[in-house]
Image (cartoon, rainbow, N blue to C red; front, top):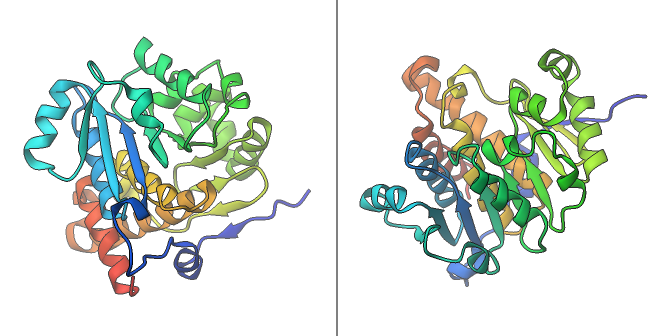
Length: 282
């Protein structure tokens, strides 16, 4: 059986990008909820929020602990902040157009409970990253029964935990393995790594951009926010993931020419991605 795949190109991204309107307001471009960060990984929430904001989301809400909120709100004034210790997370989620969950949360009972509750309830697309995926290890059946659209963004180790497959087997057949999983569980999948794979179980996109500059803690957090922004603006999960992956990788490449592949920071990526969109006339 021949695998049909397509490489993501600048023309694809330009055509798939949600378009901006002159007559519009913040509600036009969607509400994003980011359930991210913990006391020992506060930066994850900041990076995801910056990714969502720079890619055009109209309203971004960061849901996290009081310690995270106190830290972020000093320097990041654009988001709305929701204290998960005192506020109703799922009531807030009802107003959202995209929900990102997992980065920096930790593999805790609370993370698992939130993840399963979101999967078990109808609503906005759910983008799971990092610990939002890790807590489903051995429990992938929850994905098959999900009542809302779901995108997972694992790196190979996280995908190995989820599927039980050895990393070597995943890496030796990335596209087919990703496609089979997405088809079996009815989800969209972005499998990170060189030549990132994006698939909904039928269409397979391969991303040609990126470099070792992105092999740094926090890069995936930024990508999560970028995907959420495009999904909230109306892109399908497949297109949102493909657009974000391409821009994220290209931003890393451009920044490498300034800082080298050693010196690029994940916090540099959202601004550079936005500059690329400006160069393209968006």
